[in-house]
Image (cartoon, rainbow, N blue to C red):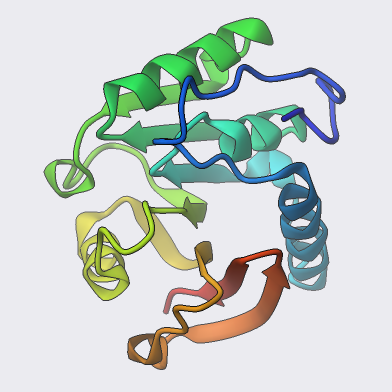
Length: 185
């Protein structure tokens, strides 16, 4: 697992000690950021003005990729102490703590924090949380801006019909994962 682009390109990140954390593969990260670049350029938005929420951050790989690419700030949230420690270790590796806010908490306990994301990543443990519940919480929490872009990773075998209300911009498959790129209204 490495940082694939930007200021810290090529830096190898620390891996989880076991399989309780499922980091996003380099191949999937390349697809995610290529797709985001396309979406953001069509909207005439630039990275260095944007804040990112990495919910269920795991190793912090997606948020750290954002920092490397010049996003303004990243908020990392996970309820796993192991995940938070791994994220901190990876941030320390590139000395990027000043671009990060880190919270070891269940997402439902973070209402009305002084952080509003323009882009957010959701990669919850498969089959442990209900995606509609997470999205409803985010919509009511004040953690994301109106018109925020979301990137959701799901198991490819678990196409969720309950997400039909989302304004899906792109849908991509990599290996056994389905990635939905959508906008919150």
